[in-house]
Amino acid sequence: MKKLLFLLVLSTNLYGTTYEFKKSKDNKVSFHAVGSPGLLNIEGEGAYLEGMVHEKTAVLNVQLSNLTTSGNLPGMFGLRDKHMKEKYLEVDKYPKAELVIKNLPVVKEGEEFVWNGELTLKNNTKPVQGKALLKGKHLSAKFNFKLTDYPEIGAPCHMGVCVGEDISVSVDAVAK
Amino acid sequence: MIKSLVRLFPPDGLGAIYTPLGIFCLFFSLFLSPTRDIQAFPENVRLGYPSCSTCHVSPTGGGILTDYGRSMSEEMSTWSYEGEGRLLHGINLPNFINIGGDVRWLNVTSKSKDFDYSKIFFMQTETEIAVKPIKGLTVVATAGKYNEGDKYEYRRNYLLLDLDEHWHFRAGRFFPDFGILQPDHTRFIHSGQGGEQYVAEVGYLNTFGSLSLSRLFGSSRSVLLTDSEGYKLDNDKGEGYAVKVSGNLFRTNNLGFSYWNYTEVKYGPFAILSYGPFYLLYQYDFRRRNLSDDYDVSFQEVGWEFYRGIHLLGGYESSGDARRYRSTLKFLPRPHFEFLTYWERQTYPDSFIDNYVLMAHYYL
Image (cartoon, rainbow over all chains, first blue to last red):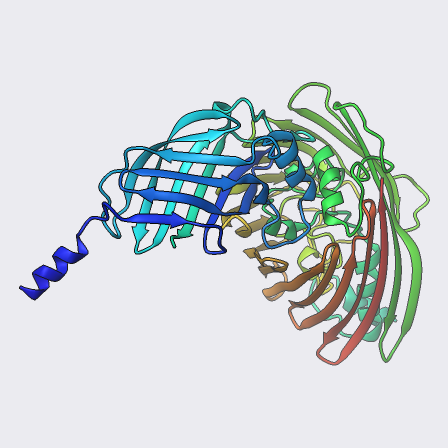
């Protein structure tokens, strides 16, 4: 009986719980893109997840000015970062990327779920789909989008090397 | 002396080189002939570059830079301004043509209990041109003087066909793809390959790794081809082949395996591993000779870019009974400039040599 109760507690869904994400070193948003020719890996990180998940709705955003592609090599790829922020994302005019999920499924602790939301970049909103996992207050999520869905960004190229259209985004965050 | 030379280059391919003169001759031959001019930075795998073709016209690295490679040289240098990496520090060429070139100056001092040798010389003075007459096709040619030679040589000349972003075909004269194409031609792992060869190469690249298949047709250069222990190799074999496969691990590491059946048979794994500013290059080759015992060659070097453009390296190599320990300081102050200095001790069962090298490199 005790075991059954324990399992029931474990399987309780998280509906009604509020998760708030604030700027913190525990909240990491990163992206990966591939450049050609040479299929070079471009890793962006340094941005924080901010926003709230409450019941069926999630409104999350990222300050794009915090993104960098230098990884743990400070000072590297300064020009690439400059082009990314100033030429393509124009972070001064469009400082945030926003993800809104209006119909979150019933989420169980420790169980990966699929969500459908809308990603806004440079005032252009497009549907995206991803997967997420909640463990306690720890959220991990992944989704992909296509650069071509956001023609406002343009086609990032430098000296004959262009970023491919597929961008994958990863979130690793802890709610307060 | 004759006895020593006979031992160095035994007529039957057998014998040892462990005489003072033999060691000196081997050392001399390693530095002066044949020169390998690869300039790639294989450790850039750690920066997310699994392939050389982003920065070099040659898919296997080295030689003339792409426009992006020139821009990348600004990122890799301690100081730079935007556009400094371009030809002659600022010239923008049309897309269909690329011009490059290299001057390498070397100061070598070598000491052992039997000799004290020092030499300052221009190892390489070379120009290189790449022309793209139509999309996907590149023609590359070089002309240069090497190791104080008076005559111009035309060492690398090839046609490169980029079929798409994954496949390429290349034919002509260039370095065959084997193991880590590391710039220092004195490394044991490069011994016996004989510089540029006539090659037909097919390469495939995707986000998981790469594959290259090379058919080798010999070299027109008349060089005495010896392996790292001084054994004369079968340079008249005519034809051979090389295979190399590699896979990417966590996007900033590379593991692979190479096979070479030409002047000798050799095969083994290689790895380029990294963590932030630290990196490790590793290669192991098992080598089989027709006329003497099998042996193995290994190379491992740890690097640390402790400040942008400044690298400290420590390396260890072995080839049969020979060992080599090296500590290196590499400095890339500005685009177009590379300075490198190292001390190394090369040991044999009964002797050793200390080498001190200073290399200055300027590229157009």
